[in-house]
Length: 81
Ligand SMILES: [Zn+2]
Image (cartoon, rainbow, N blue to C red):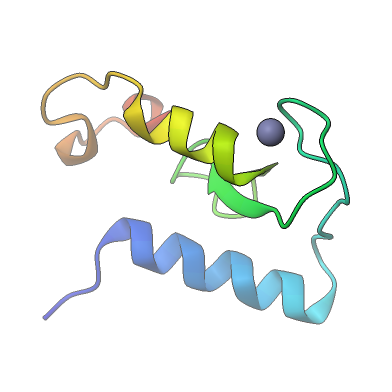
């Protein structure tokens, strides 16, 4: 089964983190709290463009409204999270 674009982006970003292309900050980029941060993609069109968020902010983003079928769009601009 083909991987979802979400899984593929995560894999690329994790590899970039491992080799040092991107770095994990100490502070949540949304609220500034020092926490165990999770990476969140802004756009799946740019796998290395990630935001680092604490648990709370990550969950808030997850619950944010998204247009129906937003991930099925052929237009990468629609993949903004
Ligand atoms: Zn936060």
